[in-house]
Length: 193
Image 1 (cartoon, helix red, strand yellow):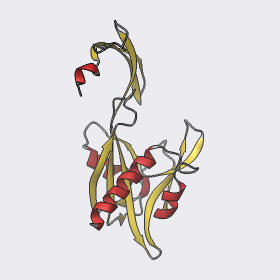
Image 2 (cartoon, helix red, strand yellow):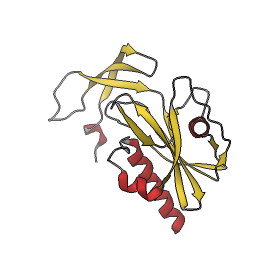
Image 3 (cartoon, helix red, strand yellow):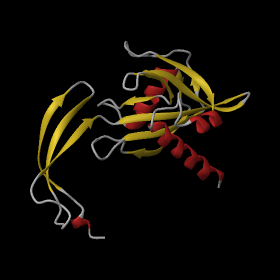
Image 4 (cartoon, one colour):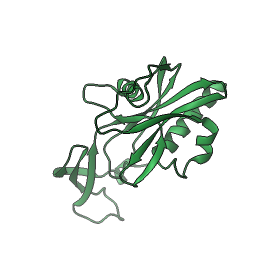
């Protein structure tokens, strides 16, 4: 493969919108030398956001292994979502610290063991950030959530099979849940060998 036929060159970038969650930039790019690409600059819209961490917490219960999940209102789709805890990685944190913090804040559990199992670009066509996924085990229940002032979530235990079978249907509508479950299943497969 000749990468030179595929890679665009960014000539400049200009911020066009800024808010507390993200900024939007126009990226002015020159296409690669190709018969298919038009000559001259092309403008791409880029959403610049901080990286995120999502944690997949598992706990052993008398009924078997379960996920610790959170019910949360999502304004974009105007509905409740049942999902893994997660959020923005603060500037002073690394991804692992953010995952452990989000788990504690949203559920009241602290991880006895936590490991990174993968990362993705949420939408590389328009977004600059990455999401880092962690598996948390040997959970310690502190009995105390540390929610932000505008954060309303309820932690619940959910059967792992119920989550796997429910993906893509309410209340499992968060697309990143699919990525998280793929990485969880990959990790489970690795451990079984």
